[in-house]
Image 1 (spheres, rainbow, N blue to C red):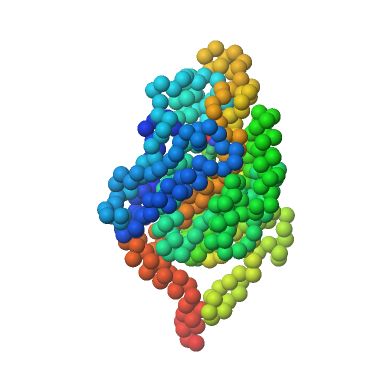
Image 2 (image 1 turned 30 degrees about the vertical axis):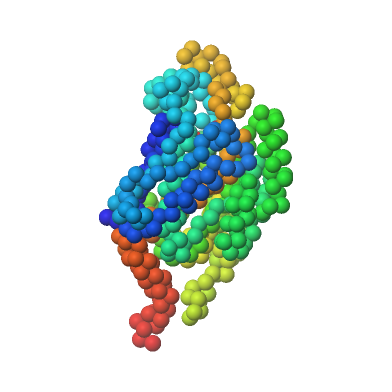
Length: 386
Ligand SMILES: Cc1cc2nc3c(=O)[nH]c(=O)nc-3n(C[C@H](O)[C@H](O)[C@H](O)COP(=O)(O)O)c2cc1C
């Protein structure tokens, strides 16, 4: 009871996509315009296709609010589709390699890949972004801030500067690649243009940073409670995401233990601090109080203008995979979905640790958790008879 949970519903060409959020604390003054801003950020980004020019996403709150405040009841968010034509949509019988088409046709016993695509396509991620924007607003009230930044498009790498989240956010929002480093924008633009001209597509990577997380989110007690496992699932569940790493990530495998692990210091004012953050803020399946830092890798878009080698499901004859209007590169959009998924997962794990029936309770109990961690050494001395 009270633990935050959410699901989505809706098809790509149905009436719209929805998210139902359970356990949003009562008393949040939901900023609906901020949810719309997150939706619009998902639609922008250099390399996105025609559908994004067609859709202009806006959220309607169907339940869970009264006079601008959340009620503590399930919050239902609807984003209507402009491209609503599910019953008229053509039958697609040439599965695209790299997409859900063939596996879904076999699983759901259909020769029409469009039936599978309705849900497997990334349109569903609009509902996640709306839900994530609500979660982010709750988290911000307890000083937890989450931001995604693109750090590569194809072979072009962006710097990820350190610095306050507000400044990073400003740069990310100003960038058509969702990157905090403006220096590589021209190179990335050329890479996307070259892919488009050669009728190809591009992938890339993004980083998500969360600041202000108290230690102890997640748990080592069961495999499915571990925070790193939950965040990894949250990111890999985004269509097209094929890899996730925390902190040093795969680089840690080639590093010695002495230089890899983050030294622990303590001071009466600051409490526990770490000399570095190679762990990406998670040890033993729990947040450790440092910033949470993770990266995700996205494969290139599998819908290509000329279609990849495939067969027609009706007769087994060779035929190129079907072409639907499509993005050349969706990494900036995927990073916005990644930010939402991290916010949703952090709110889930926070509400497992603190009282969250109302915003006031969430704020006081999160404050209490932080105060307990700061007072930890004093308490240890007291219990040791000091
Ligand atoms: C925001 C976003 C937008 C996407 N846009 C497209 C697209 O326009 N065309 C396409 O073929 N795939 C697109 N994808 C990727 C596919 O949805 C994904 O590659 C496909 O579902 C199979 O990936 P999977 O094997 O990880 O499920 C997009 C993904 C995201 C996250």
